[in-house]
Length: 124
Image (cartoon, rainbow, N blue to C red; front, side, top):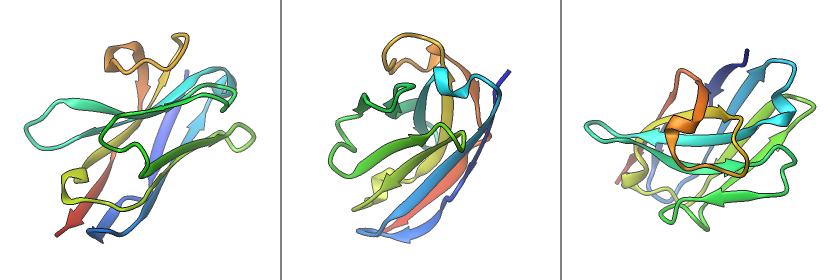
């Protein structure tokens, strides 16, 4: 079983930066693909970024590519999301999640464990 706890959300002005962390508990953290998703009010929970267990492969939603960077530390059992050049449309609750599927799935239904979420608000 994997338990996830996100942190690092907050309020920032457009153009600013935030760094999110997701601490995982569970012996096999290193073997899973990790993903970040976000959900704005009244909208679906959408894929933001993902990283394979080795950290060598990453994937990003088109809307965040070039602005966000996902990374992981398998010793600390933590995955990170560095968010730069933030825009008001990035405002959402951000969730980290775990998938046992091969590759980096973008479908949220392939992720079997979720954190509680952390709010990110970008003001214009």
